[in-house]
Length: 375
Image (cartoon, rainbow, N blue to C red; front, top):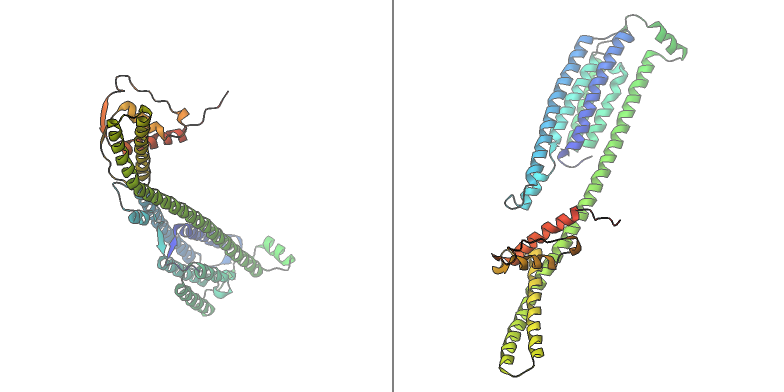
């Protein structure tokens, strides 16, 4: 039994298909009994009841299409860009699958029990072998609906069965179908036994099909749940790595700033002293490597999503492309072509943020481009 108050649309789709099969089966059974077996039944009321069932099924199908369209609209809305757009919690709610309440399905199944009782009333009552379809409805109710709804439908089915024991329209054969009777009686099987066999066989097939379908749905849901948990764990790891990277960048910023200041002061002091140029170059190298470390840490913060602003820098186009290609993977697959007139054009930009954005576009292009084969 499903404990949720709602039923997913996949289950509702299957339920609607089962009702369509029931409508077709009822119509075929009535026509065969009337035209082939020549049994007197109240065919006009039976056809009216079947038509009313088909009309109710059309309304339910339209409602199902409406919910399906609503779910697709919600998924499309949830897939809008996150900025600007709804917050993550709202996006999750928008992308959640549409469902139908158990009360709706419970009311429909109660109506089906009433319809089944009316069909049996006009076709022999409890003597009709298809009375076993009460069991099918109760099996569906016990599996799909809550305990309360299951017992409500059980009481309704028992009341309908007791009603059919007392009130019903008896059956009679108009014209014995000699060929069919000869086959049946030679096999020592009567029409009633044949009807019972058909009814029980159909009941068993429906229950087995429903059980296997439900198990398949549960296995598929379990696989989806495991996949969602795997993606969630992967996302948590990436978030933890991003937090670690941002924390490391923040913690290392202070000692690097101290080294940068000290190396600058040392270089100025060496300028006053008569020291070799090699020592001065070494000090300049220290400062340049510190600046490089700062740029790497800033890039780590940007990739971790911890930086929303950056100091504006003035650089040329050529320097911008050098910054982009510095940390770019598969550099051999990328060719930068810059107009000579633009190489020394000055730009005033947030270098790290812009370079990271352009680097991401290039990475996507590399991943979408097949690797050229060597001939």
